Length: 391
Ligand SMILES: Nc1nc2c(ncn2[C@@H]2O[C@H](COP(=O)(O)OP(=O)(O)OP(=O)(O)O)[C@@H](O)[C@H]2O)c(=O)[nH]1
Ligand SMILES: [Mg+2]
Image 1 (tube, rainbow, N blue to C red):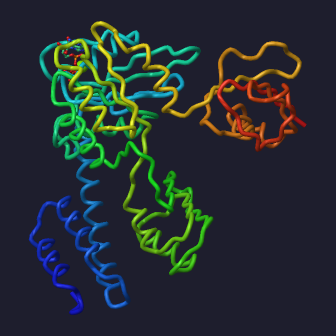
Image 2 (cartoon, rainbow, N blue to C red; image 1 turned 180 degrees about the vertical axis):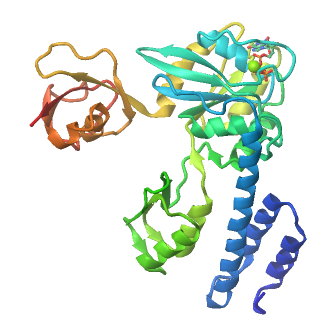
Image 3 (cartoon, helix red, strand yellow; image 1 turned 60 degrees about the vertical axis):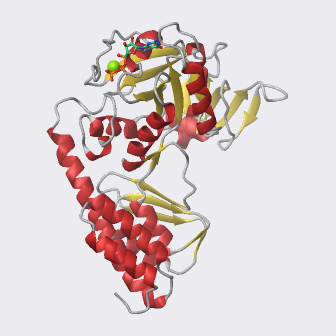
């Protein structure tokens, strides 16, 4: 420790030393770093602490992997339909009842806890789309540390396109929600988009490291960024750097393997006494951060809003394609991210399409006249019909 640390930072460091639990230790280290003034004299200390934090994070990951490997049930289910959505809740919130109400699944419903012990899929129709809804085994406090099926459930959530948090309105709704969000955050899953200036997209082994600086590096060179990333074993990734970025922003992004999942909340059992009051509490607590809908899996009240809410939150668009000489467009849409371009569509149709692309015609309600001849950067919206012309 250098001598020039302020007393509160020294005190915090003593706490770090006294903490054995790896996760707790990382937390104390983070607190310590926030108390250290940033200048040349402390840079080395900060770097060392960050290195230790990275080692601890690795240790936690390794332990998790070992635990997950031991378990019986399959962690991932093959994706089907436009999106894979995982139901997340504490036990007995009514996940199985919901799955039975909105999909073709015949999963068992029961008043005893922890009935569903393996992931169960079902297909839900919404307009001309299908969503795959999966009931994951219930979460509980400690799930992210490997309790019960916690790691499988959280692993499935990380792999999903979207999440539905199910709250039981006959119980304290905020206690349930904070417990679920807590376990998700520990597993580095976020329900809100990160504002980070560094985007690290990990790739398969052997893919190589590609760094693109779209902003400006403040206190380091491109070479130093590459060296730092490789130092943390980031060798196969596509790294995009936006805005004004420092080396420590980049280091933080390496540890922040947070993934964002579009999420909605279903407040279930609205048919029960006292549920309305709990729903009001929940709405006030969540405010407008996430969509919340009140439903009853038993009376089916509110369930008609589910498809539309999911569709909106997932931010996807249905694009219909048409052959140049045909009158009718395809009934089965391509599913793209909202704001995707003609170029993205061409890639989705066929890998050759992007090389041989000439122009496209688009029919759309928002255009003054249709069809309109457009180039590859034209942005598509839900419901657009596209005819691609090749060279
Ligand atoms: N009144 C009422 N009861 C419900 C509703 N949904 C579920 N239940 C009851 O809540 C209990 C638990 O339902 P499940 O659907 O099995 O809950 P789960 O979340 O799948 O539970 P586990 O898989 O065991 O974690 C059952 O007794 C259901 O009948 C609802 O909307 N209203
Ligand atoms: Mg169940």
